[in-house]
Image 1 (cartoon, rainbow, N blue to C red):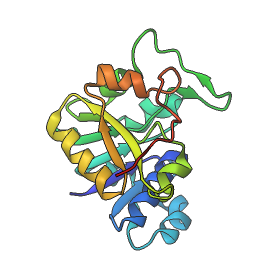
Image 2: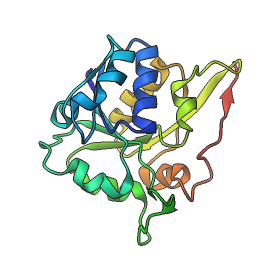
Image 3: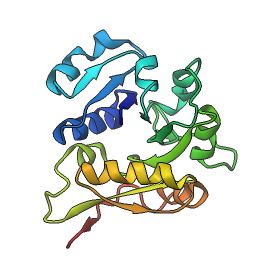
Length: 199
């Protein structure tokens, strides 16, 4: 199961670090090209390699985490998603003012899904602060909780397996219409909650 990352900001880099910590290989990309990612790839070698946006997008599971205002451009012109899994790790915040984007009554995951037609979208990795994603999920004596949601059960099962492999305790919030609303930042009640599951 190959993994690609589109976006090397706080969330994308944190996800890459979590993968590297668990020994899971992936290709990370951004709008500036692989050369701009040499330092990050060097830090996370041999598991994380820098690639083009197209290389990252060709993976079986693709996590997308880019500035909301650049999301459409970041996903434009990519090959057909053809049923592959795309993790929506985006938050509808417009930089640099950090103000909520205008969604016209829609959920951010609904808008995101429109930009990746034929993909199986799973919302995940957006609600925790980046240092909690990249840090030790067992640091507080239990397993840090990571929420996910989606409309395709098989896709959610794959993401749940990845979450478990990274050491987190995954909780399925249900469909995107429900879970996407709960985990959306800003607006949802779950973002920034650092919950821990104790055995």
